[in-house]
Length: 152
Image 1: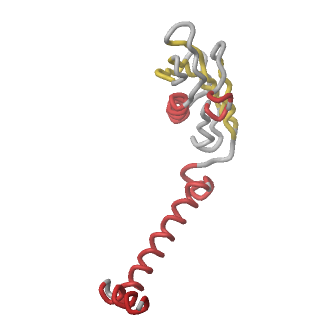
Image 2: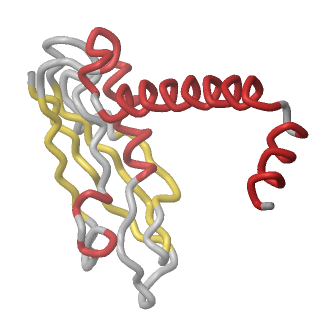
Image 3: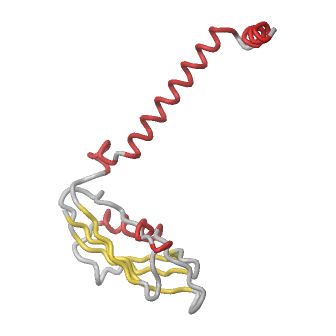
């Protein structure tokens, strides 16, 4: 009886042909997701556009605070993505609220050396993504800096 019900469902939903068609669609979607995930997880997959040979060193100062969850990963690093032989130091002045979110970031041109527009843009973008620990005492906004040193 179970086999008869199973056959009835199969016939009502298009039979074996429809099942094979759906399986092919599903496999195509899975393959597309694998390719997308691989390109996201491997920054060298699109090296000509997104990754160059070099490092970005990050230093920061925000008196009395640590990175969120005491994990320096939260003081975001843009990576070396602004072209071969990009070299320079960018200092970004930040304002952080009590929750630890960066609410404002501005490049300190006087303290920055040998920087390109791309380096400034990336430094600002990633400074704004940074996060610090919660601080209940003191003023509602605290100022500090994040320094990005691009090293080819």
